[in-house]
Image 1: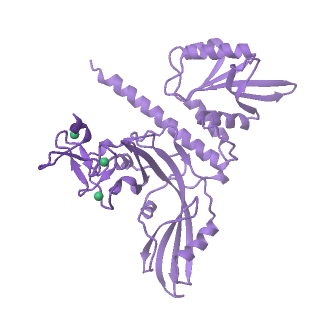
Image 2: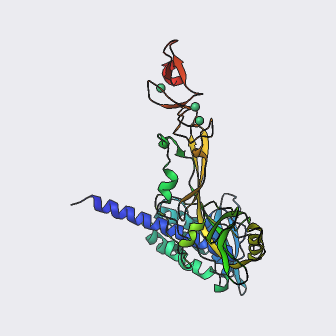
Length: 400
Ligand SMILES: [Zn+2]
Ligand SMILES: [Zn+2]
Ligand SMILES: [Zn+2]
């Protein structure tokens, strides 16, 4: 009998639940973009349930205090008038990593009873374990798991006219691209927080220049859809001077975007509460005008089409001995847009290692090695022993 199987299945199931929750989060973020979004509480389950309630005509109150005791509260209290009666529903929203057990349901039911609320719904995207379902049936509490939530979010989805344009998937290579670093002791860098994933809007403005009879130049300029900055440009035909090409975004055009449900994320990038969709702050007219400005010196620039794509941008913060580094990755095709670790902390050269005392990056010229423990050091942190031979050591080994 194999013991490996149940573990594997369990992990596969966990991962499945996990990516399903992420998909739902992103789906919900898209819904919020296209509907009148209200102030967020930071808890996506609470926000989502509130929106679900509002669509069904309820007034909602978050962290509602009911009764006399201030310690007695529920996550959400939804109420609506039904004739002369007021219908009240209390929600408990659990967004933790574990499943909700029977005794939690029992406690919730007891609280509802003492508050005099007839209906209660326990919400847990991670699901329910143990005898939770039995307890819920016994005590008249409704349970909403991931499937139930999904169903409800469908109800609050915006009509077709609000459709959000294509979203590019996160490349499978993104995780290794952002965590692997070309430094010999790169593992000395540790993630200081969860990576953040943002689906950011970018406008791809296609232009051409012709002399009236013949097409001379054809190309594209890429703009950040939030602040209108130029991010990239490329030519497919002809020549234009000083085009602001960075190479960071143009190849995104080769990737098929998804219009319906959201793309899957690689499992290595655990980004539970850090997925957002940035709203576009720029109009297509602005982009058309700017394109002509960018492709300067030519009067006959025609913008032939503007395409809006949401591109996944992953930001990670890393720490090495108190020094922090930021990396920003265009995750659709895996282009590093920003990387603090790519410059020596003492000069402008490409670094080779991280100093294990101060956490600074060091190039070949500024790198030293402790002759005792082999730690990588920088020229500022290395100390020496002996007057003639000057043996390089780290401070720890010298004092030992
Ligand atoms: Zn250097
Ligand atoms: Zn150092
Ligand atoms: Zn040492």
